Image (cartoon, rainbow, N blue to C red; front, side, top):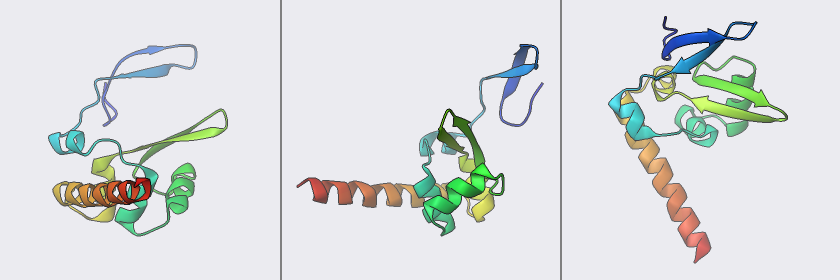
Length: 112
């Protein structure tokens, strides 16, 4: 059984909670790594707060988020973000590398 994000091998619990095993990711998605809400915001030209709130409300289809106790956790899918932004995943990877390089340069300059 599949839900597009991976394969469900078994269910457990009274509510039928599903256990996700072996998520399928393209080579490009693996190279991109974890995307932060700030990075996603820069790619779609909105604020990080917009990304967080829109994901919480289910109005921004770029991944999923879960509230654990009082803290929200975000999982942004490279493929879904590329589709939403209208960008090719390879071009988006290059854009993310640029965003990350600028962030690292700012941090390095601040630490000096």
